[in-house]
Image: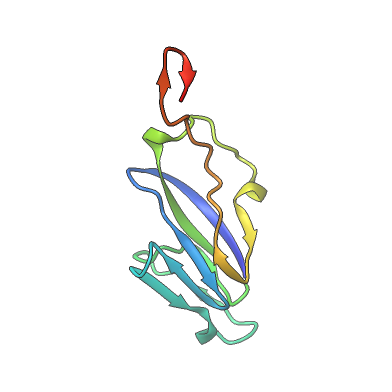
Length: 108
């Protein structure tokens, strides 16, 4: 399945995983089975869901919240950096993070 992450600056970071046609967002809070969509069919994402735009069995766009205070201010604007083809497993985080801590000008 093609997962497109649509970054949204926030106070927490979203987790996304895939198992076949099931997409889980933020652990067990959201578990969506896209096998309910017929092959070649599509549906519009509900505004209260973690998805946006048109969803299909092959591709979904996830509202990807990330902790803006921990992230570098300049993030990639290339959609390829936020697009992943995954059959099973966790979707990688595309966000560039600031170093954990800086002491005396050096990263610990």
